[in-house]
Length: 245
Ligand SMILES: [Zn+2]
Ligand SMILES: [Zn+2]
Image (tube, rainbow, N blue to C red; front, side, top):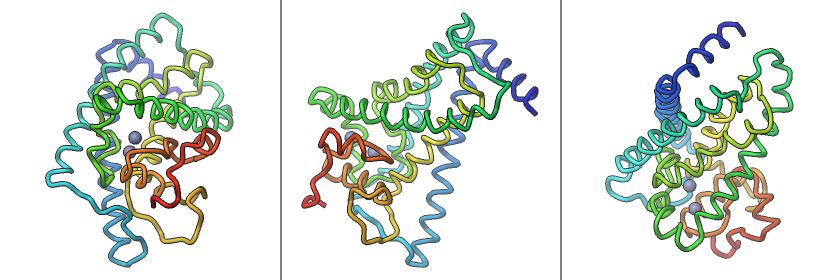
């Protein structure tokens, strides 16, 4: 199994255009499969009244626009893949295939890194110039939907796409840890943008209210810059205040 994965990875990384096409297909499949499953689950759970919609502000033609923007973002990821392949080809980046047990600590580290990276980039995107010229594309969706997960201006797609680069400068992650990052990020993103939650009587700062927190971020276009964890919002006092919910 491991040799097979190693062979596929080495082949994919052998030419820049293989890496680029792989990134485009990989993220497209994740996007369309992820949105399909999320929409189906929402539909089923709504029918049984197990969940409630949080924000109601859908615009005409929103889904089509979000899909168009997302495909552009996936294209940007596939361009970044060229640099990714180059850094492998000159030996700056390395992948481990020999010690899958390392995934046990590497995956939690990548999860925390993903949260920190997202918080920092998202905070930057809410500075005046970035918001007016870049991040407004994502915030056009006042009502978030699963289709808005990659609905970005190309500069935002580029900034968020750098998440994988920094850890690889420091450590040769195992292949499964590396693959877990985009999958983990996609699942967190889909949940965060699904705009439906199981009604629970919990404070907005509680871990289980993270879908609600990102819906409030879209509703007010301010605060709640973190994603699943709100630890950085609490440290830097950037939460949406409770009286704005
Ligand atoms: Zn969002
Ligand atoms: Zn934002």
